[in-house]
Amino acid sequence: MKKILLILLCVPMIGFGQTKILGSDIINPNSKIKEVFSGGEGVLLEGPTMGPDGTLYFSDLIITNPKRMKAGIIWNYNPQTEETKVFRSPSGMALGLAFDVDGNLLSCEGADFGGRRVTKTDMNNGKSTIVAGLFNDKRFNSPNDLVIDNDGRIYFTDPRYFGKEPIDQPLDGVYRIDTNGTVHLIIDNASKPNGIAISPDNKTLYIANYHWGHPDILKTGAILEYTLLPDGNVKFKGILIDLMDNGPDGMKVDVEGNIYIAVKGNIVVYSPKGEQIEEIEVPNSSATNLCFGRGSYSKTLFITTHKKLYTLDVKKEGFHIPFKKWFKF
Image (cartoon, rainbow, N blue to C red; front, side, top):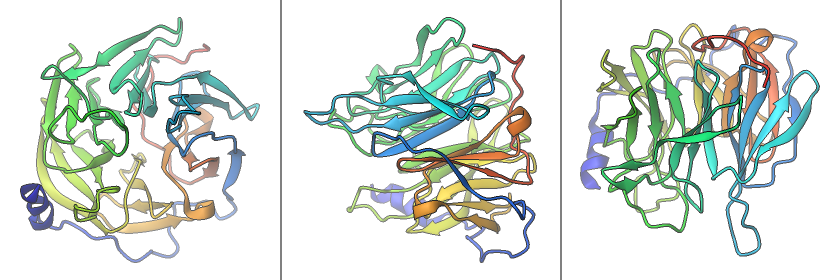
């Protein structure tokens, strides 16, 4: 553990969280954050992602107890009708969600009676398959969030924050799933990787690192920057943004490479150089994750919080790898 702390404290500082820059061009002047869902049943909502059917999918993390054995929900929100319905329950304690180019829903299933795996659901027939369930013949700790690169490879974080199950992996790592199904540990010293994103040029991998829930570990929040190599491996560059005791969670990028991070309960926007551009205040400072919509919603942020889902129109378009085609499930 001391070795991991030393790596975090001694890496080069590429940039720090900067003072808010006034007059940024991120938010439309007349835009207001809008509550569109308030029926969260668990401790927090997470993993928003828009599918090729033009609707939003997001997870509801429900911690289990003897009177409440739900193991999570995946909700489906239609921005046109503003209706929300249950897509899957139990969800296997789904957290991060993402769609691949074929329109399949990928899900990080966490611990606390969850699947502790990454699954793929064919949205045309509802059938799910396990994409990654073991590494070195051991179950993952608690897959948290994921991102897909331009070549279809999946990258996911595996920190353990909660859950009564034994911890099988010796560290909280970052893994890559190749298109042939092989799984590789690519980062073993981030100590507590959470959110994950890839730059639009497919050359940089970002990791949101935070030690929440571990009083014996220094609570250093940071966005770690890695060079993403053509073969899918990474090379550590340094700490892009030092967030000190503020714990970063989910994050996404826009088409210009700006990084939108759920941190301090708000959405804070940084340039690719680590300079703060904007801070978007979220009601009750409760943001957990975010995504950009697609199509006519490509300049709309969907923000999850502890119990609610919000939307906000912005000036920038979110970065996505295009679907092969749009579907109607």
